[in-house]
Image 1: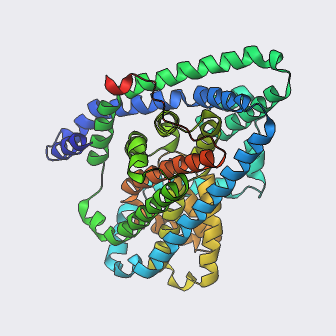
Image 2: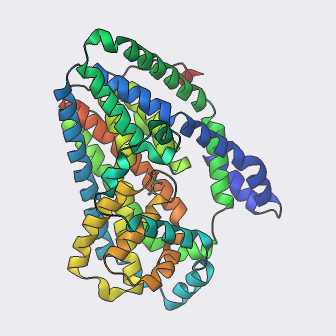
Length: 425
Ligand code: ASP
């Protein structure tokens, strides 16, 4: 990571360095992310079907499922409340002058990425309230598996199939179970192999982040806003590790250390979906959560549980309102943000920049003037990538925490069982 940052910075000092990094270094990072995404569907399918069919009886799944969803919603609401409290106390919007707003608007308001995010958000908003349930149920499983954005559909199919396997006599499901068990072991080995490339890929990813970063002056103006988000994220880590140490009696330092490769990857890729294979490996092998729990909790969490994202959405929405629409900052609007940020974080895809798309919906739901939306996003755009890296790290930490808590609650938190060779290579 450090070498990547240093290399990226050095490259910005030369006239040819940026192009060189984009052409010759960045692709290494992209290939690595592609490899991780490549195994996401087989991994979810194999491990979820294996996990559920291992349960032996369906009532256990109900218990795990119910608790997981409940804790996910609770942690997300805690994150939003932390975000809202901090942004109201620290008032990061107060030190943004007219001149800064103008400068940011000039630089970004016509940026195509911003308009793309707004139009993507409006597509999502035109849907009815139950659309998310409809979207979860695939009409063609092969089509669902062909698109990483349809991960929830793959999860749905895997759960459905796993449950059906529990319901038929054991000898009839045996062959299928063996097939998925074996697919699961092979895919996990693929994760090991891909991870051998991680140091080089992380170097490439960070070098590229640095050469594509924005003007430091602009970043400086946004420091207080960024600081508010970061403080909130740090508080969230405290919430997680307190829960871990109080409920499972494990050392928080140990927990974070076991999880750290996944966190590092989340930070470098800004995508919880790309990080999922590694999160699963760390949580199962290094923290000791039984696969029966992790195979359900983690893929579902990667798609719906985004505490970092929801916290960021709450802070960013109020920050934008503080600068551009202070009259809209009523108590009822802030309550409204709790609900919409909860739904928006569930609806955010686990890919870079997704949180910002759903932020548009949060803003629109409180009645933020639509003609000022582009300016609003322009305000936070410059610093969005580093914050995305951080919030993704928290998203992944949150998923792992909940997996550990749920495992403990159903007696499935055992001893770590590291069965790989990659860590020693
Ligand atoms: N990048 C985040 C993730 O994958 C989502 C977001 O907040 O943009 O978890």
